[in-house]
Length: 197
Ligand SMILES: [Fe+2]
Image (cartoon, rainbow, N blue to C red; front, side):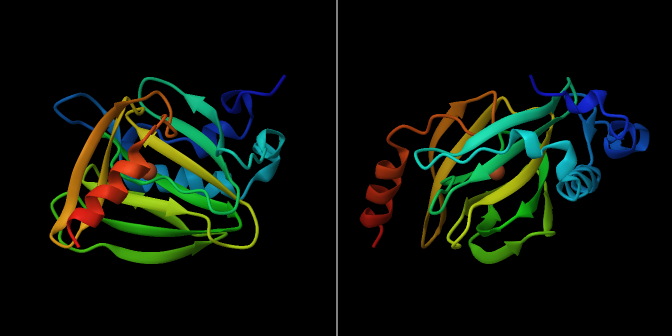
């Protein structure tokens, strides 16, 4: 039996609250920088999540550390070579922090024409808005552990592939986690990229 994060005596000082939320037409939503503070603080506190760490060579292991109507927090464990495919977060804002290992991130904007690449090592964190696209992959020589937060909680993700003119929309996938079943999307993305060579 694992311990819910919200029962930790440290949770109140880690979670967004009050002015960390902003009004939007669809209701209150945490500010990305507030989520970044939360995931950064959590990444530095393995005593609060190390019991959840598992590695699986066939698929990323993930578990939800917290969920309420305004935001959620996930722990994701990355074996070598595992990646997400290029996606947005279905209208949610978010943040992630690397707790162990490192990830390479391709990142851009739904309306952009440039996809940039950067490496995030342990201690690094990123906050992002609703138009953010990214693909995360572990191409290092050791597994990685990351902490992610979304507001409001994820309900759908849109997947893309990048072609010379920008992002090419592939498919929306309803989800209740940051790791939906992407099925044949990798093949669809490869075919789409090949058609634009
Ligand atoms: Fe993501």
